[in-house]
Amino acid sequence: MNFDPVLLQSRMAPMKIAGLWRDETIKVFIDQALARCPDKIAVVDYRKDVAEPQRLSYRELAARADRIARNLAAMGVGRGDVVTFQLPNSWEFIALALACARIGAAANPVMPIFRQHELSFMLNFGESKVFVVPKTFRGFDYEAMARELLPALPHLRRLVVVGGDGEDGFEQALLRDEAPPLTDRGIAPDDVLLLMYTSGTTGEPKGVMHTSNTLFSNLHAYIEQMELTSADIVLGASPMAHLTGYGYLAMIPLILNSTTVLMDVWDAKRALEIVRREGVTFSMASSAFVADMCLAVENGEATSPTFTKFNCAGAPIPPVLIERAHRVMGLKISSAWGMTECGAVTVTEPARALEKSGVSDGRPLTGIQLKIVDAAGAEVPRGETGSLRIRGASLFAGYLKRPQLNATSDDGWFDTGDLAFVDDEGYMRINGRAKDIVIRGGENIPVMEIENLLYQHPSVMTCAVVGYPDARLGERACAFVSLKPGMALTLDDVRAFFDERKVARQYWPERLELIDDLPATPSGKVQKFRLREMARQFAEKV
Image (cartoon, rainbow, N blue to C red; front, side, top):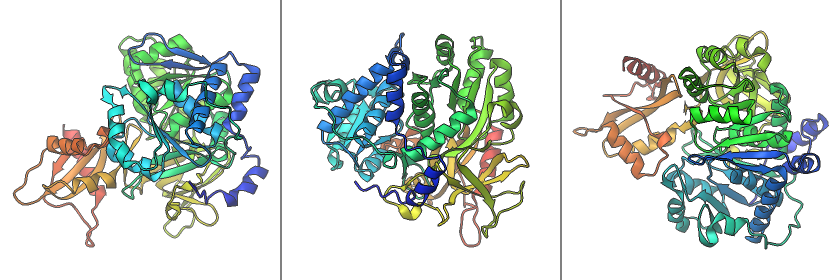
């Protein structure tokens, strides 16, 4: 497939001259580990209901990734192809990412929460050649779902099932040692390394394309800002099918030749046990993870003196949680803000975390510029709110097959769709979203898509979905609905409707408010700011 990464060409020479694009691929860091520390543990894989984790050294991880790469190549997968994998955090996830890079294919991790509705679009839009799923996970039969999808996936050559039997089982299909050696040089620094879908406001997910240069420029800057080293032991509990998990919890430990400790299912008590047992020093996830751990410690669970740094992204962190985490766990919470399109844009360094994380989202990483502009595109004074624009080394290569949506000016400024201001010290704060997205526990809910589905319900006349504050998850989704004459609707009806359409459960509205008419402007545009306030007030009364 022709990825057409149109946002690369103008940046290639300037970024390489500046040393921001180092022309490194992940192979550089794996080869480095094999030369310097082949027997160091690269991955510790904890799984729910399994007492002992699986430990893989760099030598073992590289050998498995090589086998997977050779078997993918034997299936006819290579440069310009897409491999989709819907896996929980696991060594197989990381090995697949390495294997894709080894044969020049683009890795396309997708969230385990997705069901037929989301997957049928993503697999067809990306023309995926191989789809890898677990046999079951958290009580759901992924193999059955994938097989149900197969007739509608004309580009797919192979389904592979982790934990499956027969020729489609992961071990038989991808870990056989009979496949011939690789002859391809592997992925190049400016090839598309990663295809990751992000929920937007267009009604369908957009496929964000990253290269090794765009992604690794951000990871190197992040390592510097967070003061991470090869001695760090990273807890990988946030889903690796998000850029947070893929980049900062899977790739950064490999770049550093350090260790990542994986959890497939989040449980705060067990996470703290793992932190103590493995000597974890750092992690990154949404603030809900921190709140859960704080509660576990307050209920008697022990913490660890080595676990001192945590980076929260996805939504603003309540200042009370920052103070609470430091008081009960000795944990410094650094704030951050970013997007799938550019990775972490701003991060608060650990030295100032207690002071700045509650009032800002950090300062720009090396290689990233930002500016705040008014409606005419002119920069506003510091302290004033305006539209956030960013440009720099880590900006993505463009949206797959949709260059018209790239929202990037001729001089490289990307319109984030967010509102923000910058304080006198250069720390940025997001204080509104022009994009119509609800962020629930760090997960973007594609509001327009959910509204479009609601409009298909026979009882619904008009509808709008907005977020309302939640102490643990940041936001939850509330659906405001006006009904057709003589019709009725309950929240259980809405849940059943989405369940029938195989929509990810995390996308379902968690509150339903029936309303005679949606508030609107004279031109008919729904006034969602009024609905957000109404949803907030309703939630406070509960």
